[in-house]
Amino acid sequence: MGMSAAGTLTSQTREALTRCLAEDPAPSILIALSGGMDSVVLLDVLRSLAGEMGLTLAAAHLNHGMRPEAEKDAAFVAGLCRTWGIPCRVGYRDVPALAREAGASPEEAARRARYDFLEEARQAMGCRWIALAHHRRDQAETMLLRLGRGTSGQGLGGMRPRQGRLIRPFLDIPWEALRDYAAECGLSWREDATNADCSIPRNALRHRVLPALEAVFPAAQAHMAQAARLLRQDEDCLHTMAEDLAAPLGRRADGRWMLDLEKLASAHPALQGRAILLALRQAGCTEKLGTSHVEAAQALLTAQTGAAIDLPGGWRLWKERRVLALGRAGEAPAPLPPTPFPKGGGVLRLAGWEIQVAPGSFADGGQPLDAERIPEDAVLRRRQPGDWMQPLGMAGRRKVKDILIDDHVPRSQRENLLFLAAGSRVLHILGTQRIDESVKVSDSTRESIVLWTKNIEVES
Image (cartoon, rainbow, N blue to C red; front, side):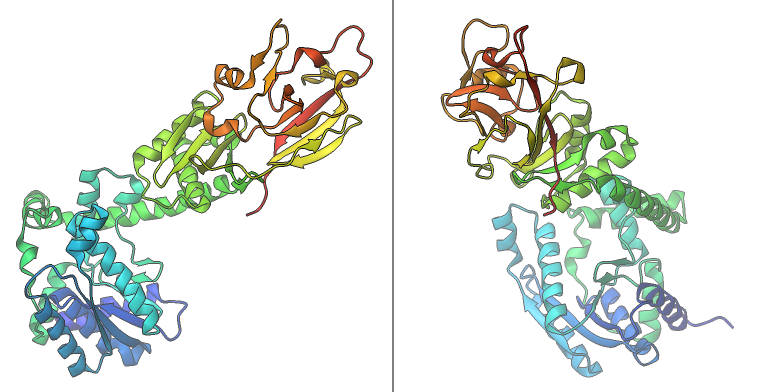
């Protein structure tokens, strides 16, 4: 005689919890309890495993303020937890108002409010984990939703059994197993009438698309769950490789973050996008980044120096000669007082640059300057209003601003350049071949010097 529905589901859940919580000897779990069948079954199964597995349980329920019967749902959950001796926290959020404020759909606003509330409840109730009742059908719906809206391989991997503090012990279990458990154990629950509303995309997939798909491929949900597992394995491998590629990310003294352009450009495209995305998030660009943003960032790798893109949250990413730089659009550069120029040679670190002043000539691959023709009051500084120079080979003076525009230097980068200047006259724009006619090397030059510059990384 086979195992009962309750015995089978309990055994499968035990195995899933063991995998999720292997390193936790005394797990404390907050159960997201909506009052629907799935979450009531999850509560009952975990309750039955609590003594055996050393689980400490609590529950949390959020009233979204979206349905007239929501208060009855909250009362049902509170009563169930009292009967079973489970501590319960009930909260309320005006989700319609939150959706209007954020310009989001009610479903998206509800999801954000729910996860925020669950995290607050987890901390308040002293729990380590949050258990969600997502099952195999939910996973299939999530994959179809993401596929329809546009996603990457990472998105098609669907939900994870464990993600941060979230655990999903039912994720590989079919919904029918939960239904059979509830019937066998005589459980009661609350039905959410909005689950039948097919104007909501997830419901339309559940009631229309998945049944049509299973009419052609009866094992579609199982096969989709298997595909999701394999995609997550691939993603984990690629993520580890991308972390190594993103490791050169650092913060310059001018406050800009940067990525090694040469390493990125030579990497496989599948790693480029992942590494850029990791780097953006590490730098603080945590707004929602889509595939289009990552693809635009990858396009910078082969674009002209100075090319730039704007990203959500007021961030801007642009290409410099050796790095991809990231900063806040319109962000003022770090203050930099004028620094006396070491004509006799030396090494300086200023505003994210390392500047080495040393004897040199054209043969060394640099742009030499006549050391004797550099004024004693020359300094290294940022650009100032009224700056001008007489570009090498030209008869008249030009505004530095016009030169930078002609050289396609992006506006976001101009304020971070360093200049060798005497008064308003710019003698050299560091990191470029631009020098002033007055300091050019000639037949009468007795000593020529070169300013070797490179970007430096400073830990944040």
